[in-house]
Length: 347
Image (cartoon, rainbow, N blue to C red; front, side, top):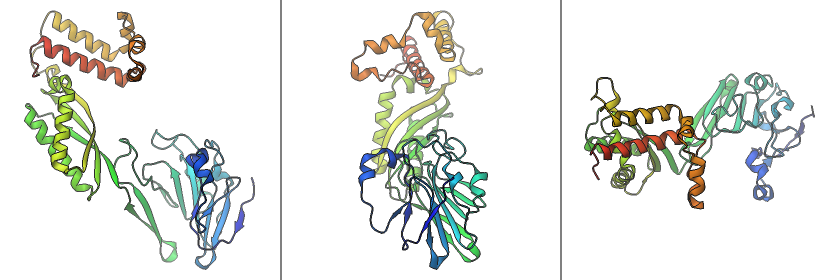
């Protein structure tokens, strides 16, 4: 393994490049401020802050997709210093969240073998602590980018006290926060109860945001008598919920999407009897197709053919290989159909 070089810079902030920096022509050409030290992408480097007895070790990405464990070449920590390792990595779990690419994977045992006091890791956007001895932390990103990056985002303030006792404190830095409002409609029987439950969750999230604007995905759950009506008129209820958000947030709440995860109360064993005859057969057909979407082909129904017949700008909306999307379409189609057949449509 290449030997780590050592250089004695002034008390500069150190940083390492990751997959986005390496892939982006603009960031590669940017001139960093004079007080910032960028570690090499060719081999690990060590920067010492002598008056504090601190050594910082790191290596950046030379290309966008680094698949090797870069930490293997990092030097063993200096026993006379407080040692800090900086590494852009997916960790040991392929990103630890199932979302991020498996770049520069490492192991807890491998990081521990370097005898550092603290590892500051990048790449995974979700804040998480991997180990307490030594302290190994993903501080996460400083701003959520989309609905899957919910909750407070910011930085981790690491304080080193006497005898190198390390404490951490999270500092939120996000300007707009993504959240999911989980609204349980199990006990709801009328639409007014939907509004009450949604309003309560939105107010709770707004209060916890500490003055920040919120982008919220509303998820309705539970086995409820409102299930079919919700699915049959999704657009109407989405607009109603957005109106509630405006009233509550005064412009600080934005509803990104309404997601329906409710179940039909009529399918409960103790619920109303399912009608006999053709209606029952249709219900059975929908349930079978939702559990085995491949059977659509047996009915000579080709979703790829449907996509090809749509205008170009709409073709991408059809996702024939996505089981979740197929289930959603079947569920909504079932609801609209039975609402009309059974005369329960509310307009």
